[in-house]
Length: 61
Image (cartoon, rainbow, N blue to C red; front, side):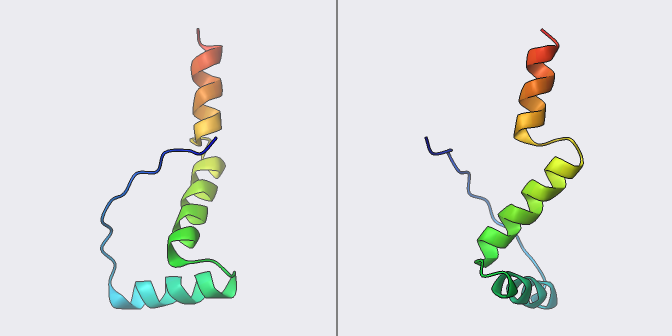
């Protein structure tokens, strides 16, 4: 099963983009893949990831 992906525009200054591009290359990811990984990691660490949200909503019923 594939998850539906949403598209949106993100504006970054050139220096931030260059740093992100380098980080992604260092980890053999695309810039998009690196952003997805960073966001997923931050959501998981904050307890706000999709799986965490699903558990909270099902346990509160």
